[in-house]
Length: 417
Image 1 (cartoon, rainbow, N blue to C red):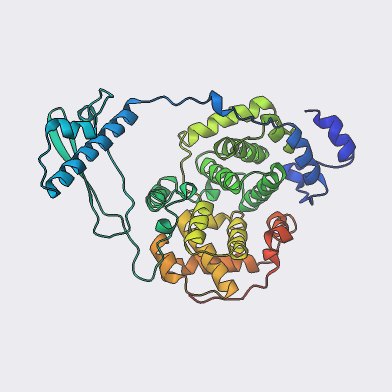
Image 2: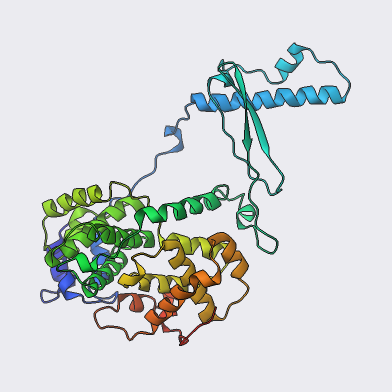
């Protein structure tokens, strides 16, 4: 990518690129807009292969499942015969569900999951292993209390909704929150302050917009940055290197086509070398133990918004509140992501004057109003603070009509839960 020649023409020789020390908060028509155009040229399109190149290989597990299904057919045939008063021979039963695969279900245990709306439904499966018969009992599917809509049951037919396991998935996310809890670390940093961290996060929001990255990528980058700063001393001149590296790692996790290393060096105004950012990448992954499966407040917010069936303007307002909290050091240490996501949605409801969500949100989040009240009030105080000149990216972003101009909505001075 001919970055220098191209940007001399588009940006002008006197323009400054978005280095950390010179946050410009450019509009789409300035550096940010030109950066988007230049970045697109550096991305490679992935061409999908034709259907004729796809092959399906029958594995041992799939053959076992087929064997199990045929076993069920045999049992149903026997039941039908007894109901009709017929005596079926062994050959009759085998012919109704003969297994030509040659693989017995006794060679491996088969676990099944069932989505059932009836509270008393229990799935029992008998599996024969090494001559012994085991009964696997699946507990009944958990159903919400009366008055709460079973969102996962409504979306059971949509494979994109992950309905069968959505509830368990977010319970698992909540379980792992304590593992990745960020302790208070600013006091232990010799050169890094809360204000410097806020400038870095504001710059990461600008990078996310310029590269057109997913919002999950932004939240992952901020979480990685905090986890690293909580365990390692960082010089102020290396703070942008930490943020850029965190964004690079996050892009590899959450993006289909992540930006290249040279792209991140460019937005750092070439303040670092390729070797430095790759060395920092290895170091950062080692510090977090190569475990990037931490929870994100953004994912919790989207889940809570779906089950409460909020409209897009309300969800966007909650996203604005949540994204603004990324700049606040106190909102990102010793506070769980699920609490923050639920509190952001509750505050959006309060600003919009929406009621009737309490029972649904309590069931799916596990939090009652008293649990969220301190965080909700903290978020409201954060929004009512006068904006700083060097921290305007989030507010400018959500003042656009694409985001329903939610940043311009009048805010109450207080809310009551």
